Amino acid sequence: MAQNSTDFKAVILAGGSGERFWPLSTPERPKQFLNVFGGESLIRQAVSRLKGLVAPENLFIVTSRNLVTATRRELPEISKANIVGEPMRRDTGAAIALSTGLCADGVMGVFSSDQLVGDVRRFQSVVRQAIALANAEPKIVTLGIMPSCPSTAFGYVDPKSGRFVEKPDVENAKTYVKKGYLWNAGMFIGRVETFREAFAANAPDLLPLCAGVSLRTCQLRRVYEPLPKISFDFAVMEALSRSGGVAVVPGDFGWDDVGGYGAFERYYPHDEAGNVADGDCALVESSGNICVSKGPKIRVLGVSDMIVVATKDAVLVVPKSRAGELKKIKA
Image 1 (cartoon, one colour):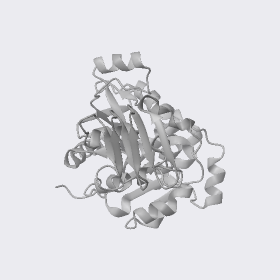
Image 2: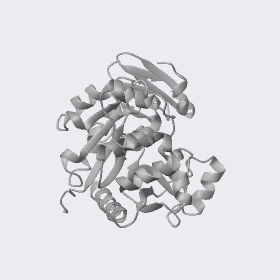
Image 3: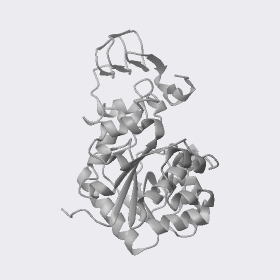
Image 4: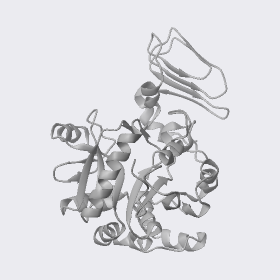
């Protein structure tokens, strides 16, 4: 296996709130800390699959200020100085601009803390291809995932032209899948100066973060307060793709966004009635349910197509068809 590239730096974005996994996920302990898929927390898995690609001193975590302590506890092997907390949420635009400032030079990769990868060896091979391409051309490389359905939850990218589009409606999603577009997995690789030039041309309000800023809380807050809340996809990638500044490396490595409770149906066994259970759950004369207990007993009778989740602090009951609306709940 190839050794670490001294020129490659990686940033894992870990500031999400994980609202679609409430009450398993809370603002104090969001989705990336969940240990329900793959035997380790999602953020631990994100770090593990980068081993051999990046030297430990070149790995950074960008999270929320209130999650720095929890992140350091989860990842004690990473230097405290490399775990940086944003003072307020400004979406991925600001987070990636800050990442550019942290990495300073060389080739930089941006990855997510709350996804699954089934084939780590293949994932690393695809990332190495992207690193080589980023070194050869002044483009931001995105990893494209073969769609399993016309999802409206992801941005899409044309692997031939590099045309990048944000999350579409259903009809456009169907069109993109027919045309052979790939899902944008939210993983970007490019030379630091390429990222900076892209911000300068398309999102100049975020450019101060690219130059490197003081990480002292009060000073970083002053920089963040006037910044727009905007995703990197919308702020940079859509416009950059129209000017030919995006390249695509297709990847088939078992990627999963693990976006909500539906993921339990993909990773846990089903009983004869199609129920999925984790923990002390009993489902009687019931079918198609997702039942998760982290402590209390759950007993279900005569219920179908529901999600029932219990922790020591809260209970959730919601139809599977409305699982995407959990943000309405004020936890």
